[in-house]
Amino acid sequence: MELKDTIELMQSADYKDRFLAEYLQVVIRSRRLQAMLDKWDAGTLDFTPTCSKAVLYAQLANMQCYRDVLKRRAELEGIELPEVE
Image 1 (tube, rainbow, N blue to C red):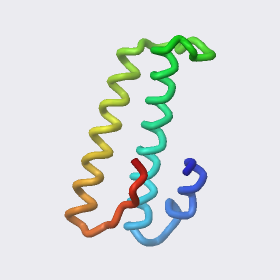
Image 2 (image 1 turned 90 degrees about the horizontal axis):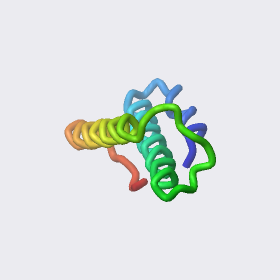
Image 3 (image 1 turned 180 degrees about the vertical axis):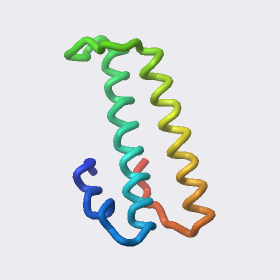
Image 4 (image 1 turned 60 degrees about the vertical axis):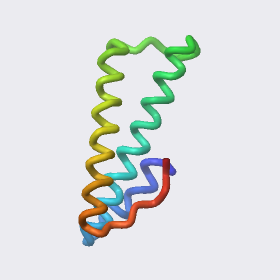
């Protein structure tokens, strides 16, 4: 799944669809950031980031925490999330 695949959900009148789009987006973005950091650690990244690894790892950790909060909220509100991890 890619970010563009969430557009229809984002535009829905149903808040549960918009919630699902938000969840999917944070999953997609955190996976991409993790992949970039993995390449950086392996020395195979094809560009030089302008910020430090520490900042990017902090961003990733916060994105993962946010994803977990969304999962908990989905449980509380009865929103079914797909298995994407």
